[in-house]
Length: 438
Image 1 (cartoon, helix red, strand yellow):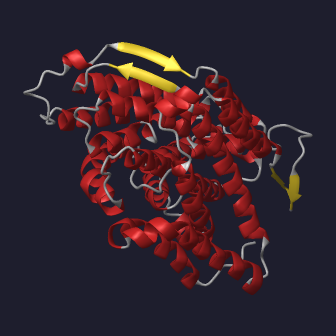
Image 2 (cartoon, helix red, strand yellow):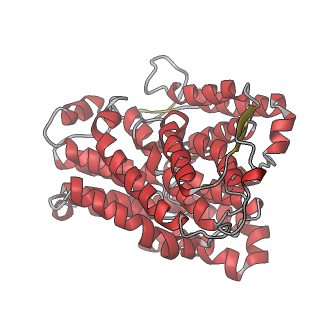
C-alpha cells in the first residue's frame, strides 16, 4: 500500500489538468467529443500500473470506492435539486445579489455545496437575466460552491471526512465561524465593488419586467434531498453492524451508495416534469463531472502518495506550523480534490504530535490538546482554496457546465484562475491567514 510509484507516474495527472485547461480552447471539437475517453484512458494508465507493475490493485480499487461515494452523493443532490424550480423574480441590484449570496452561503451548510449550488444557480441567473455576466457565476462558485460550506460536516466533503475520522459534528461551527464570517464578508464586499460597475442597464428601466414574486415548484423533491443528506451518515464507520466490505481492516461502504443512486433514480422518475422543464434539466453537467473526476481520482493517486511521503519526512514534518498547514492544505486542495488533500494533511499533522488518523481515540485526544489551530487551519484551507480552480471542488465544474449550457460564456480554466481567483479571491484568503493563522 505504501510503496511509492515512480515520479513519472504523476505525469498523467499533470496532463489531464493541462487538457482540462486548454482542451476547450485549442482542441474544442476533439475535447467536446472525447474528453471522457481521455479522462478514463489516463486514469486507466495509473490503475493498470499499480495493479500490474506494482502488484497493488488494492490502492486504486479503494480510490474507486471513494469515487463511487463521491459521485453517488453528487448524483442524488444534483437530481433532487434539479427537480426543484425556485422562481425568484426580483430586480437585479448589487444589494439584492449580496443578500441572495449571503443567504445561500448559510443554506450551503444545510444542503451541502452540491445541493445548494444546483438548487440556487438557476434562480441567481434568473434574477440577473438582463445583466448576467460571467463574474456572477464565478462569485457564485466562490461563495456557494465553496466558502459557504465551512460551518458543518454536511457543508463540504473535507469536513465530512474529518467527521468520519472522529471530529465532532459541532466542532466546525464552534471553531470556524469567525473565519467563515470574515471570508464571506470580504468576498461579498469584493463582489459589491465588481457588481456596481455593471452599468448594462443603467439607462434602461426594467423594473416593470419583474413581478417580485417567489414561487417554488417540485416541493416533494425536498424529501429526496433530505434523503440524500441523511444518507451521508449511513456509514459503517459510524454505525456498528452495517454491512460493508472489509479491506485490511478498513470498512468500505456500499449500502449508502446503493441508497443514494436508487433515490436518484426514483427521484427523477417521480419529479414534477414541469419543474424539470422549467429548469432545463439535463444530465450533461453531472456526466461531465463524473467522467472528468474518475480520471482525476485515479491519476492523482501517485501525486497524493508523493505529497504524503514528502510531508511525513522528519525534515518537513518539523517545519509544519499552523501557517504551513493552512497554505499546504489550501494550495494542494486547489489542484487536487480537497477531500483527500484534507485527509493527507490531517494525517501529517497528527503524526507530527504522535497520533494516528486511523485511531478515533487519537483524534479525540488531539482535539483536547492545545494544537487544534492546526486542524482549524487545514480545514479552512481545504474548503476555501477549493474555489481557486474549477477542479478544487466537485460543484465548481457542475455550476460551470450549467452556466455554459444556459449560454453564459464562462471563463476557461486559465482565465478563471488569472482573471478571477488570483485578483479577487486570493487577497481574501491572505487576509484570513493574516488574521487567524499568521
